[in-house]
Structure formats: structure tokens, C-alpha cells
Length: 306
Ligand code: MG
Image (cartoon, rainbow, N blue to C red; front, side, top):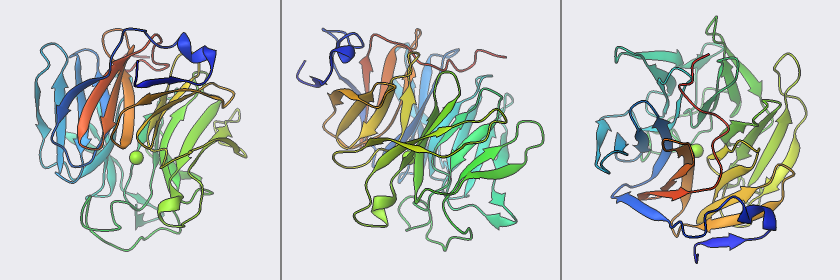
């Protein structure tokens, strides 16, 4: 169990003693955005600089290109109907791949100006799409195309499921990145990688309480990264938060205590739960796709309908 570090006895119940880290594929430049599709038992993820979406077939272990060019897609998620929702750096928009294969734009502007470069995305219980919009896709030509920001900052946005209206919901982060809701939907966790642009700024995850109208309130600091950054993360059914954290995955109890780690050995960008029982962590680590079976399940089971 060399890749497992237990900080708190609560973590012991969440892992499987004889499970091992599996490297499923390698050959990317910077991979992120895993999204699992239970009906087809496959995983889609982004190889951002290589401008492609990849696909891992869980039934036979094969890997293929899912979409190329991908418009330098970064974060992906699977909505409740099993549709792929993607954050595209190059085209600075959030899209949804429909049942007929067409690609529909969900958001590409706010207040008449282009978005920065949508980074990560989740679906709320009411069907709204929430996404972060830092500047990484317009900071240079590696993960998109360099361009000035047209927005007053890097915000967290909500796309209304009925009207399609795009609204800035969180404006107090420097570079909001990964995001996820608690199982009961009462907290929205948001990672901030602002230290890439303001040296000395701590890498954090903040928890925003959601009011009855579904709006985020004053945040509290949930966790501070000891090394590197928190990028993407997901929450299990008990509310434990599994996050990318430098060269590994950190697991935090709902009270914010770091209870354990999985050492990966590459910089982890993002992860998600998948597998037929949603107990398999798929982990995007820099150049490679990894998986690790755990003794818990995802809080959110995509494609479960309404
Ligand atoms: Mg990210």
C-alpha cells in the first residue's frame, strides 16, 4: 500500500487494502476532465495541449480518440441524462453533446463579452450547469490561443436550465478552478489556483453555503493545499471530498480534515468516480490516466434521470 497514506482512521474504511493504483494509459501532454458514461461503460477525458478528447472503454481496456480537434477542451461532466458537457478553451464556451451527436452551445458570453476560458463544470440538482472561468486557456498558446480577458474577473457562472441565462454567481475568487456540490446540495466547493498569477497566494478550496434560492453565500475556507494546487475534485456519497493535490489525491472529511492520500507520482489535474458501481476513481495525472478502486461510491450518479 505504498501509494496510500492514512492520516486519520476514517480513511481506512474508504480504501481497499489490496487495491492498487492502475496506470491505464499514458501519452498525453496535460490530461484533465474525466467524465464517466455508465450506459456505455466508458470514460472520456481531455488531453488539452494535444487538442483531443480521449475515450477509455472499460469493457476491454482499449483507448481511442473520442474527438479531435476538441477545441482544447478542459473540464467535462456527464449530466443526468448521460450527455457530455464540456468546457472548451479555444472557443471559450461550454457545450453539450446532444443525443443526436450535435454540439450545442450552453454559454459563450456574459454581459455581451466573451468568457475567458471555461475550465471545469458540474450539474446542480436542479439541472443548472455551473462552471468556472479562469484565464488559463487565454494566457498562452499551449492550451488555447492567447488573448486578453474581456471580463472584469474570473468568475463562477450558472446556466439556468429553463431559460439558458448565464449569470455570474461567485466573483470573489482569483482563478476559480475545480468545483463540486456536497451530496445534499447545500455546499458548493470551489478550488482557487490564483497562486499561478499572484505568487504567494495559498491554493485553497472554499465552501459556499447555498441559500434556499440556490445562491451561494459567504464562503468559509475548507482546505489549504500543502504542495502544488487543488485543481479538479469530486465528492463521495458520505460527503468526503477527493481532490487533486499536487502529485497525488487528497481525501478530506466533510469537516475539512485531511484523512488520507493516494500518491500518484504525476501532477493530478482532475478525477471522477466511475465503474459499474461508481466505486472506481478515474484520475487524470499530467500525461496519464489512472484508476483506483475505493470502498465508497460517488455522491452523484450521472444519467440517473430525473
Ligand atoms: Mg481545472
